[in-house]
Image (cartoon, rainbow, N blue to C red):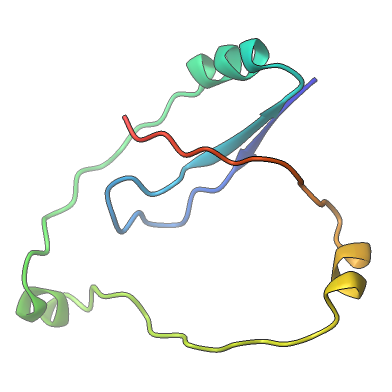
Amino acid sequence: MCYIIDLRPRKFILSGQPIGLIVANTQTIAQEAARLVKIEYQELPYVLTVEEAIEQSSFFPIDRRIVRGDVDKAMKQADYVFEGRLESVQF
């Protein structure tokens, strides 16, 4: 069994940003699934200074909220709950 979960945002904002998540019964199946994933990128102009970011309205939104609540209730109501180890590999 293997699931490929699409994590692509509308627009990538940094190098190394996750594009998806592969969940499989074995490492071999996960590696096979990873080889099947094809991504096409449209290269955008670089934003290298604060001034350029302001000019292009290209910056990270600041959202510094800490939300508190009933974790157990949220986990029970979630459509999917993934447990285990997560490794991120940047090529």
